Image 1 (cartoon, rainbow, N blue to C red):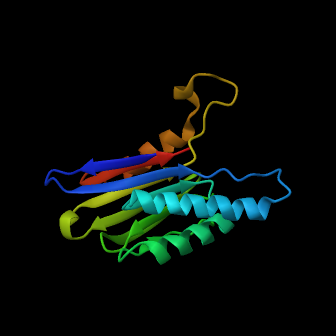
Image 2 (image 1 turned 90 degrees about the horizontal axis):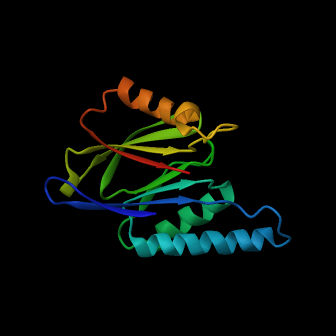
Length: 169
C-alpha cells in the first residue's frame, strides 16, 4: 500500500507498507527470493516513499532491498532498522527525518522520527505490526490483542503531539 499525507503547512510526505511473504516450497527459492526482493526494491524506488514499512521481511530480502534502496535512491539515502525482531522493518529518508528511537514489543515496533526541513518540529510515531486476528472466533474486537497493546503503548507514552501511523499485516 502507498500513502501520501499532507500536514497543516501543506507539506507532503509519502509512506509505503508492504507485507513480504516468502515463498517456502520452491526448489529455486534463492533465485526467486532474489528476484522478488529486487522487484520489490525497484517498485519502492519508483514510489519514492519517504517512509517504508515492511512485514515478513526475512534477512535475505532485507539485505537486498536495503542495498538497492541506498544504491539507487538519488541523493536521498534510506536509513533502516534491522529485521531481527519479528521480520518488521522500517526504512526512512535520512534527508527528511532524524531517528529518535525504535521500541520493540511482542509482534510490533514503534519507530520515532523527527522531521527536518518541511517537517521541522513534527514528530512521528510509526507502528509496524503483525496484527493478530481471532483464532477460533470471528469477533476481532475480543481477540486482537496486538491492537490493544499498541493502543496501550501509544497512550502510556506521551505521543499527544506525534503524527501517528499504523502499518501491519
